[in-house]
Image (cartoon, rainbow, N blue to C red; front, top):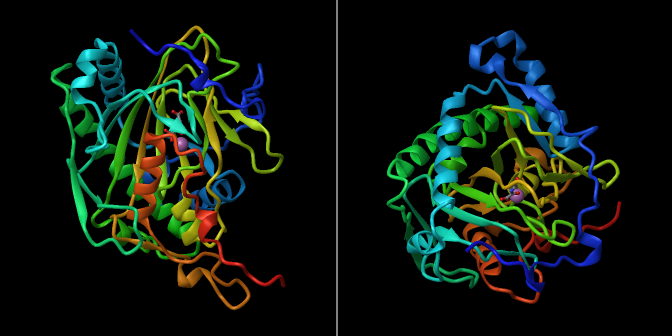
Length: 353
Ligand code: OGA
Ligand code: NI
């Protein structure tokens, strides 16, 4: 039995998708072949393209990124096979209060249930997180991946994918660093003990696509997201210049990249983490696979000194990434009846100039 529609999925009227969402005038497409081919004379043009995409959209698509199409096909196939298993089989690797990794079909975004099922794993097999959301918590818990028995190649395929996408993440991070006027490796050290995780998303056909969303509107809390999507489409991005929702047009063998909250804070708002959501449809199921590029839990996030000055003072108080992540996870898990943690909660009250 799959998801059954009920009131828990119904979005407030102002957040429901319009019946038609345009794909026109969408996010920029950037060809990464210069970095794959090592054509150094083309680097500065590429850096400028990445910089303007981050500034104007917070989102872009990359093509010719160096990851073989077969790697994408293998993980797509593994996701299809896993989600096609009977519910009781999937629930054997179910996420619980004691382990946030594994299968789950009842996630909320902003206190409304998402029309989706997910499988989460970390690229390092285990992850450390603060034991509680209390500020200054020193104790940590360690969580390990839960791998299903079927399909048998599932684990290998997921690990192969994670290695490839991680390499791409570092390349993109270098381009973003350069585009901010920093040295290429300036941001890399934050990821020494990374907490990267990958989510397989399955959005089944939905009987009420005008009332529900696959994922409600949100911003990604990590540094950078690298998303693979199939050819169905449904990812909507809030266009910065007019606030309209635009649909990201699927391009075969491409990835969608978006700046997360951490880059927004590091860059002191030069780049913003942009709101997005997933619309569903009544005919076709959809699969997507985000990779969330995250620093270690102990990392404290604040605007980088090189990017602040007397005229452009730091706009955020420092916050701990592990605490932030933990608070987000808890609110996705339980219906809290209040807003979950957001970076603007750390925004400084600056004097108007
Ligand atoms: C997410 C997300 C988009 C998609 O999981 O954070 O935004 O297309 N997913 O599945
Ligand atoms: Ni997202």
